[in-house]
Length: 145
Image (cartoon, rainbow, N blue to C red; front, side, top):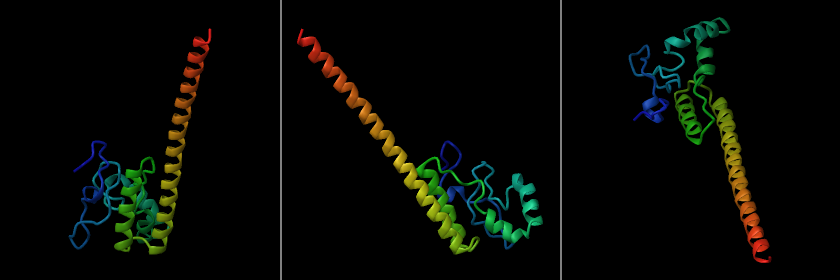
């Protein structure tokens, strides 16, 4: 099932393209709504040509397999990214060492995100506590008169 933002998760984000052998492509679809991965998306043709000129399409595909899919704004986005990374590693679209490195970066992003959320919750608690203290001070000051 597609999410309302069009990004979707898991299997519904699988590329709609076909491999040379006629099987369905295993890469996750880009977040651009095209339903295709970097390799099959018509919107990335210029990028693929540039990548091809810089050292061969196969190398560029491996390095760019996850381009456009990085959404570190939410835990769901990171989880979706890691799903795509897993598929790319299993299908050997990217080297396992690179997959480990990128997964470690995603883990750090999750920790930073969790820290920021905890800090925001703490700020809200401190603000609520300060209001409570001010309210009690006002009540105590008003009843002492």
